[in-house]
Image 1 (spheres, rainbow, N blue to C red):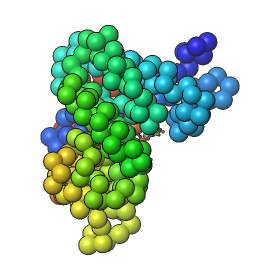
Image 2 (cartoon, rainbow, N blue to C red):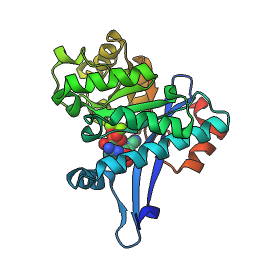
Image 3 (cartoon, rainbow, N blue to C red):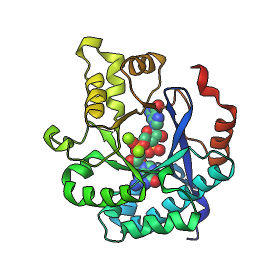
Length: 248
Ligand code: C2E
Ligand code: MG
Ligand code: MG
């Protein structure tokens, strides 16, 4: 608590086919005076091991919902925020209560909240997670399978997952720069998502050539440094106001 000031969220835009910002992914940050910037990969992992992730997860969820409220107040009614959720959080009995609490406290439409859960977590706990996410869906909350393609879940089970979108891992975006188009399976992942009635989101887009491939293959949403790095809330709102992505 004493160091709460060094903890904050950054937001990275997720762009739709028309070049509008569809959503922001909330990414946790710690800046320490002595240690400098600490990666979320590092501190989320520590928070999980020290059993602090439930409390931290609630703080993150509240902060993200309060950003949705800010967006609503500024008239950005259709811009969603997507929040990364740890396995420990989603597997708890009180997860739905936490979601409802954050939504009610910040007085936001639940349709503007997206939950991101990494594929390896789905693969290990399919039934419990499906159950939780189905309940969240009844409230209007959407969900996404993060880092898709790296969790080694079998395809036969993939179709059982109750997610609204898949986020294609950066690995498959990097492949676009290395391989011949005929040897790529990135487009097959997009097709798989569509066959299952899900939207496909590509993350880690850094180059125009990657974007061109994705557009050609009908990918629904785009995220990466090519558009914008994660930025603080005030800068994220500036991005909405400037609407710079229309002409990429
Ligand atoms: P993730 O959810 O897959 O997030 C995407 C990561 O890719 C972010 O790193 C983002 O900054 C980075 N990224 C986005 N576009 C590009 C790009 O074009 N090029 C490159 N090289 N990287 C890009 P970040 O912020 O360091 O987060 C790393 C991971 O930490 C996240 O992966 C997520 O698993 C975890 N994480 C971050 N925030 C939270 C949180 O609030 N809660 C939980 N449970 N996990 C979090
Ligand atoms: Mg994510
Ligand atoms: Mg990811």
